[in-house]
Image 1 (cartoon, rainbow, N blue to C red):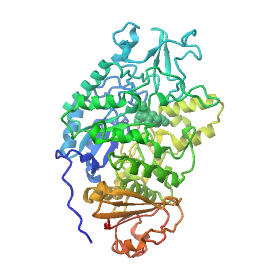
Image 2: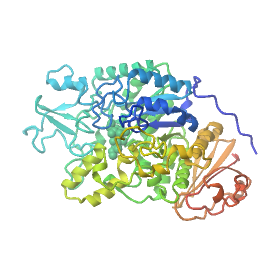
Image 3: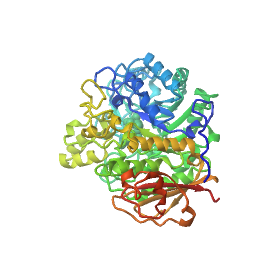
Amino acid sequence: MTSVPQPPTPATTSDEAWWRRATIYQIWPRSFADSDGDGIGDLGGIIERLDHLVALGVDAVWISPFYESPMDDAGYDISDYRSVDPLFGTLDQFDELVRELHRRDLRLIIDIVVNHSSDEHPWFVESRSSPDSPQRDWYWWRPPREGMTGGEPGAEPNNWGSVFGGSAWEWDEASGDYYLHLFTRKQPDLNWEHPDVRAAVHEMMRWWIDRGVDGFRLDVINFISKDVALPDGIAAEGETWASGMPHFVDGPRIHEFLQELRREVAPDRDDIVWIGEMPGVTLAEAGRYTDAQRREVDMVFQFEHVGVDHGRGGRFDTRPLVLRKLKASLGRWQVCLEATGWNSLYWCNHDQPRVVSRFGDDGEFRARSAKMLATVLHLHRGTPFVYQGEELGMTNFPFTDLGDVRDIETVNYIQNTRAVGHGDDDILVAVNAGARDHARTPMQWDDSPSAGFTDGEPWMAVNPDHDTVNAAAQLDDEESVFQHYRRLIDLRHHLPVVTDGSFTTVLADNDEIYAYIRDDGHDALLVLANVSGASAPVEVPDVESWNNAELVITNLASDERPTGRPEEAHLQPVDADLQPWEVRVYRRPSEV
Ligand code: ISL
């Protein structure tokens, strides 16, 4: 048996690629912890709960937007980039948060939303004030289609649809043009062609670096370079609006803009991490974006694997998971980014339903399937992200009333589908499967009526399962989902093969088993997971080579293991049938 290497140096050293060995925890501030009793989470609440993150063992925290905002899209519509919204606290509290995180060797990543601003940002207010405004070209203003009058149906400058439904153009009667908004009408797109826009963004980001941040998560950053001709998209049959994506995803000047951004914001700070959120990014482009030599971003959030259960209608049109598709997708990214790129690994964030409800079993096998999914994800090559509550196995909210949703995307969906005659029962099914609201219910700290999230009335209903699914019940329970996440994070810190090993899919065509091998020339890991609710046989290739392997992690509770004793779990043959949702990870010396 090889000895386990010592933990790598802690995250506070000047090690440049610290993020390769790190696990990053995402906080969506509105629902994490409320310190002032107004029912809305805030920075003070985060500061009070930092010990939870220390207990979990993560290395860095990404906080979704906390800036001043009209909150049309829950803060992804920013009206002052250098502020903290009073709902969330003050800049002094932000500074305190940075100090408190750093004191605990935790780094801070902030969310930068500069594909668009809020329509209430002074830049847009000025831009909108007149066609002659010196800031008019900071946004995308266009006249109505030739021969048509602004505001009449079909007069929009092109046929692009907004991500959240309807046209991507809003008619501005007062100044006599349309403006582009790929998201809500309160999120006008900034025009990155204008050098002053780019300079203003650079300056703003330098200001945050001076306040002590350690990295940036860049919202829809591969949308910032548009084809300036803004050509029509191809609408699907019977649809009014087309996707404009071919004309702004990974657009003509995107690499130039990203290289300039990094050069201008932090030329001599290689320890700053850059994470690009990139819907629709292709594999080839992701390889370029994350090639360290090119100095663009360190990793991208891609969406392929969280779209495998989507039909044409996206998140509101879900299908049962076909495991082969999920494995093929993640496996392709593993292989293609192996040489020069890097992956981010996630199941959950503030835009995704809860993974245990989506790909696992949130009933009888909630804890077991949550642990299995965590294990499968975290042992891929890349940087794993844990979204608040995921480490507890939090589940989707059981919506029974459409009036309980809060997210603008869901609200628009309900309105638009009702308008074309869909019944509320069908809409409810779609919402329960795919809405972003599932991720946004309050964090479940304990079993008290508001789950320990607030002393007041929570802004959104707490999931009724918080009486059993909560942090207080899990922290000291060695067999909890929380402790399983902690062990996975710890494993990454101690076993270099988790970060550095090559990745090989095995049993690619098997529809129940998710299996792969990691190998760094020193250690080899075999991950075997049953992604189904029935026990499943597993034919391990080259099974003899694993016969004396060490079982490094499993998700079976002690009374569920064949021998009942953790230290004897390895006595089970490697190729024994996997129980429903079981995962086992074996380690042996590499034979490479
Ligand atoms: O959730 C989506 C629509 O179904 C995605 O397309 C999502 O809009 C996309 O992932 C971009 O997300 C980011 O930018 C949005 C914001 O609403 C999301 O919360 C954010 O993560 C606009 O800023």
